[in-house]
Length: 199
Image 1 (cartoon, rainbow, N blue to C red):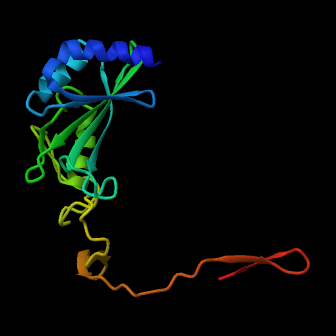
Image 2 (image 1 turned 60 degrees about the vertical axis):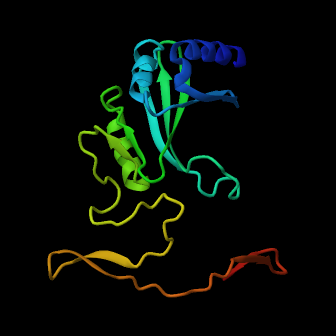
């Protein structure tokens, strides 16, 4: 397995050259960190020449508290998982984004499966995919403020929404949360060997 990955890495390094910032061979997987500038050209080469014809997934990463706060690199990254069907090879790409304006070109024109994955990363992380045909929220409400997968997103909201049958529309109200103490469930056995659950 490692020999196959090392051969694949040499082929990718020969084809992509300086577009590869770093690489990592670990746990039987190859990860390439690519530069943002020529990202679309790199992806086109990976599809047309290297044979990675299928996009499996796109996900976002917020490294702000990674490694107990010891992370020193860029905060945001987009990770792409590719599959080459003919050669049965997998590849992970990682591209770091600018924290102030996390923007990257859309790969929807290269792999059409990217459409909803990019919308999800936009919705949950706030990453902008330049050239995406329909970049809008997919999981949260259109009026939702913020991006819930960012690590600085508040865990307790201030507004909740519900459907009001009298007004026949969705309305927003301040949240009504009450503090509660959660008591762990304790299981004890009695004299006859039966178990009693106590809350």
